Image (cartoon, rainbow, N blue to C red; front, side):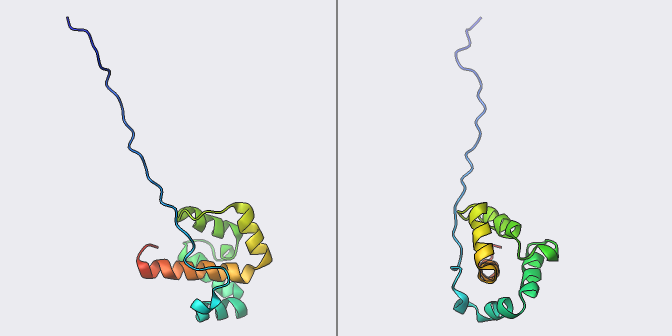
Length: 111
């Protein structure tokens, strides 16, 4: 009878998570004037567009949870506290940034 010298092993493949960044800055309104105008004059409509893009309830469009969900999905660095502060200090700009990012990722085929 031969002695067992090697035990079978289970190897878990490494999952590589690639971090990304926002496609535009919070104050890059001029990169998409249509989104900027919609955010300035019809914040609720833009929020509904964002929620619809993300398959969520229309009432969630401009929320901190939507920004956090999106940032998590695309591995964008940040924190819930940062999302809260950005949304609290400049809600229109942060919602416009989210919509611009969605539009850019759709154009790239990565949304």
